[in-house]
Amino acid sequence: MPTWFKRARRQTLAVPATAAALALVLGGCSSGSDETESTGSKSTKTEAGAFPVSIKSALGTAKITEQPERVVTLGQGSTETAIALGHTPVGIESYEWGSDKTGYLPWIHEAVEKNGEKLPTQFAGGEDIDFEAITELEPDVILAPWSGITQEQYDILADIAPTVAYPKLAWSTDWDEQIEIIAKALGAPDEAKTLTTKIEKQLADAAATRPQYKDVSFSYIYTTGPGTLGVFLPEEQRVSMVSSLGLTPDPVVKTFKETEGTASAIIGLENGEKLKDSDLIFTFYSDAKSKKEVEGQKLYAAIPAIKRGSVVAGTDNSFVTASSIINPLTVPWVIDRYLPMIDKAVATLDK
View 1: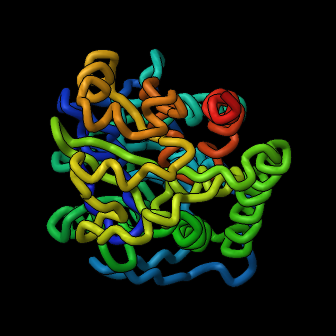
View 2: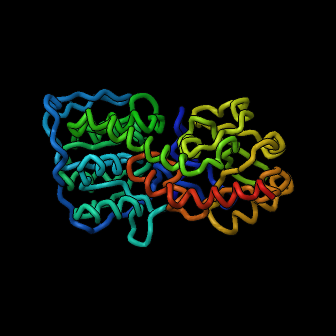
């Protein structure tokens, strides 16, 4: 089952549930494991002096003495970054909400298949981490810099293998900082900048193809039930991704007070009129039923962008997940799917 809301100081990893009590699960608590056998893959060339290395986190210090070959990942983004660095993990936290018919997040499945690697074993994460499954994978390192693992969970994991947790708060690591941490743990610290620059260029190149997005403002909203309304703040990852594609966050969003540790603000549906100057509204719906319930609220339907159909709303769970996190695999996977959706919404502004 997906989590309702993963709190984060800056770049949140999960979205509040809709009225139908389904949510985006970034950092979710799915269960079960995949039977695919997996072995550690060779990394890109280890940089000179990369090991031994100690990586401090809020929960403890991971001391990695030599190049890890068997990598296990928890939370979100670590799997994708490890793959981009030439390390297909032997095990990853399962994430059913957002996975395709193969049982894997599609961009992960596609990347591993393209590299000719074996798919990682999947295990339960979240509040019910399958420590036994992780132990059986015999990891050399466990990567969880963007996760919600607790001190108790960390202490158990650290007994299995050096474990890299978040620097300060759970679910609060910036996307570029996460890449930096993982690259350091895998012996390729200089590659972090390469990956970050590539992501920024992919987004900038896409923006360059859409001059019509210039001066188009937007707000990215969500609901947690009837009468509720929340707005993601500019630093939140899904907002940052849209901004990088050339659109501009509605200035009014900066006037909203952040709900502690969420990179979002709960403003209430009664304040929906404050979004009157947003050219576009970005949001998501967990299914057709919840979409109908949310849009059926008079105050919601009265928001100008909603009323004229200037809405970009993901309904496919895989897309909603990928468009909510920035990493080396999600960004290229999302761009070609996002642009037509945004184009359609922008076109309503000419009517």
